[in-house]
Image (cartoon, rainbow, N blue to C red; front, side, top):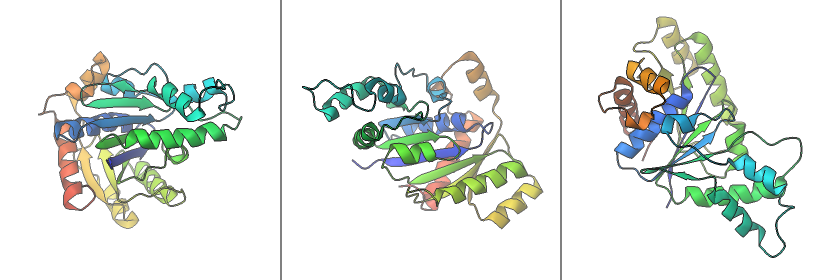
Length: 255
């Protein structure tokens, strides 16, 4: 199975992880299951948005194996690592979660990272959809997996600084060894764009695929620790994300 891979990137404070949770909800509701959610931001928080708590992260596995030097001699390294990775996967109703954890420390774990990329690629291949909540620079995603990205959603707030940051993120993607088939901008927590922001978008050429308004229900769920997967269908944010995906499909950014 070749999954449909959506990656999200954006500067801190734009609500990127919240949007990632809403994207997962949208994919599950539309029947594009099973969905694998990958929390690739070192500031792990997608688990709370989805109500799925991982016991271990991928970085925990890397540290525990010490670059694959501490693997028992009678077990193939690939088999041992696959067994360890099973502990990192949290299963839910149509949605599973794996958290990458913090980036590597100063010690090089090249052998284990190579095996991790291989096994994560195999893991992702078992899902119809994959959603990656990435840090702004996307270096974590580039290091960790060989998967290409079908749709990159760059998340911004409705400010000129946010839009300029989004444009820099898009430019950075071209510098990484990562294939992104389509990219688009999502402006979060706003119903209409200020005129200066619209002008900056037009000048930058980053395609706007949707606006997601402030939603009291989302704020209430987050304060109460309730998963965004349980938001009602008529939630304004939920409806906006579903319109966003419909627009992406019409413009050929989805399949």
